[in-house]
Length: 235
Image 1 (spheres, helix red, strand yellow):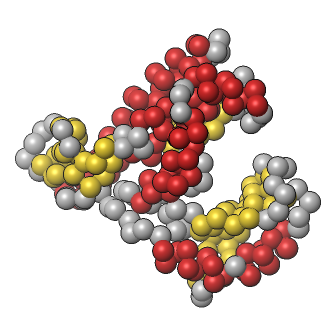
Image 2 (cartoon, one colour):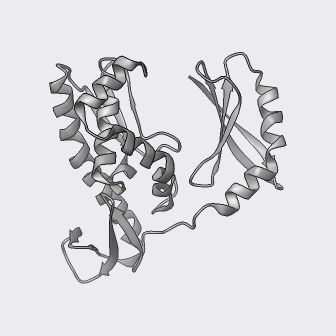
């Protein structure tokens, strides 16, 4: 899938548009990014970019309406409620503590200066994400007789994971905010690409053999996944 970025004037302001050309797309489609930073425009292989931009402009009213309806952001600050593996946790600033960041029951404790709270919590969550994701990825790969080359954690706008032909896996650190079965599904999904670099029936059989309730996790991501972008720092 080819990608490119352009800026489109919508509602008197420049809006980032991520252009994606997909061989499986039958028609143009538009989706507002959960962060509100822009939209994703998917074009069939034969469609012209100019026609796609005209299509996006024709949907300016729809885009503005979707942007207005996006849920409010939840910054990492004292008293905010943030999910950890799907379980709501309240952030508590502990300026006099010397333990860094730690989770205790339904509390996320963050020590240090207040201006460092957001960054420290984000860094901790990224480490937690790696600690949860990496062993699962290696275990699933071993089950399939494959090896993972490298695992990276990023903050992509419109995908939860990716896999290269060389065995490199990449995941959104925000998966650590999702329920554990959803995280496990995404890990299994990307590991399955080590065998099938497609979304064929054979691919989905592999995923189903690695984790249960694939349908439920996919449905959760479609309906609730965008909410994970509300929390903490912007991309």
